Amino acid sequence: MMRTIEWEDGVVIIIDQTKLPIKFVLLRMKKCSEVASAIKHMKLRGAPLIGVAAAYGLALTAFHSKAEEREDLLKEIDESAVVLRETRPTAVNLFWAIDRIVGKARATPGEAMNVAKIVVAEAQRMANEDVEVNCKMGEHGSRLIEDGDGVLTHCNAGSLATVDYGTALGVVRAAWNQGKKIRVFAAETRPRLQGARLTAYELKRDCIPVTLITDTMVGHVMSRQLVNKVVVGADRIVRDAVINKIGTYNVAVLAHEHGIPFYVAAPISTMDLSHTSGEAVIEERNPEEVTNVRSIRIAPEGIEVMNPAFDFTPMKYVSAIITEKGVFSPEDLKTVHKDLKRQD
Image 1 (cartoon, rainbow, N blue to C red):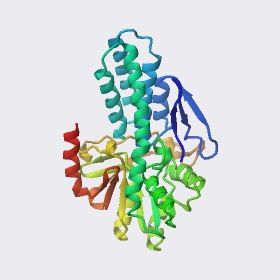
Image 2 (image 1 turned 90 degrees about the vertical axis):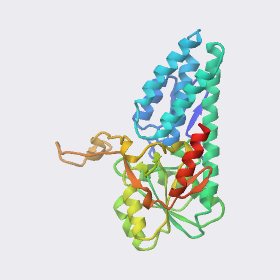
Image 3 (image 1 turned 180 degrees about the vertical axis):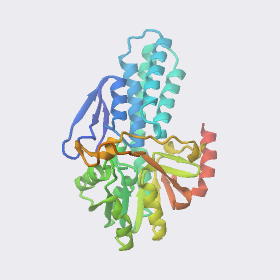
Image 4 (image 1 turned 90 degrees about the horizontal axis):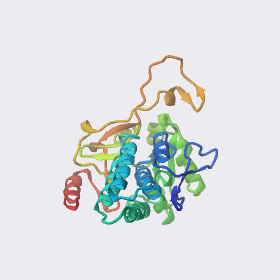
């Protein structure tokens, strides 16, 4: 296991994921703006981790504020929330976490100092909750993994995408820890190569057998019956689709064609069941991520580029959704939606 974000007396410490796997670098941040920049430039990434990072960003604002009046502090928190909301538009955990911290701050009576203390405590609580949620998710999901399975995953949904343990890789870890002899096939995940750089790094470090493949090999390994299950994460789950890293849709269609179960592992905080895919905003990233590999250009100058960070996988391709509350079929989401509304 690997804690990806820590709070240390008014400093947020993260692993700079843009440097992995070549270098292991820790960044220390004292300002919310620094956290926002780290999210925007993917020094940290993964929907659950982005949410907790946003919470810690607001905690930094509260902790270092000089405001003496409660309303002045709330104004500063609101201003920081605006900055964080503008970093990445697709992962719903970001907005869920901001709303939770802002709501907690506004609901806390007393002086500014008391509000700041509660905000920091809530952010730390959210970080610890994330680990607990992932472990529960792994426990539920591991029941779907059998001894001897070949499990394919796309992008990175492990410790590095969360505070610790992981969502999709949390399922893999739980199955492995139960003694199930499995092998993971990690798709490289162009253009930012999160599968090659991060998933392969995590699994190799944990001594879980992993084979790295290019994205274009997915159908090949399925046709050779090397893969029995697919487990991926999610950045947002809407009523009619799963929104995840670009290329997930391709994997789902190929899994369907080969009769392979396609599972999505994501916390309840990733659910956005009041909306459909037509209402979601897909982040369009810098064309240089496609035309360049690191600093080396691989495409002609002036070429037109598309670079959406995510795609939609229709629910008809999803076998089940693994959450901390249990495993749900896509049809069960109506019940989940009603339960969430009641909790709200």
